[in-house]
Length: 142
Image (cartoon, rainbow, N blue to C red):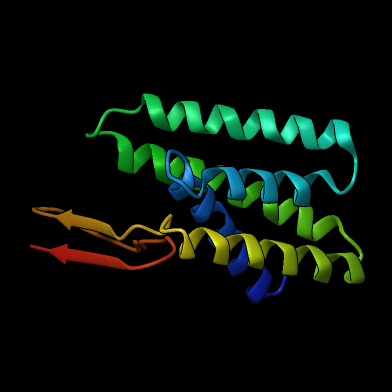
């Protein structure tokens, strides 16, 4: 089981991927994530690049009204992939990959991929709810 810091790192990584698609930060995030997940295996890295390209295509195809939902779904998918990677690695490699992921996340945020997220909830009932994401969030409950 992963410690909270690594779970948070995976969540931030998934968010960075979803936010970076279609921005100037994309190429750096794309290559950094593929390198981390590929773990030095060229074929595996190429497969990750293809998955990342599909993610970008899905996000690019989303309409404005569905973008938030699609972005959250893609972030969750990548969070899960990153969690699985971190969980399966021995401690030494886990720390190395964690450092690589942190560098990619910082690169994404410094390049402006961490755009603010704005959520408006009106006339809704919430029970045992949570809003997850990375970066700056503004939530309005009316």
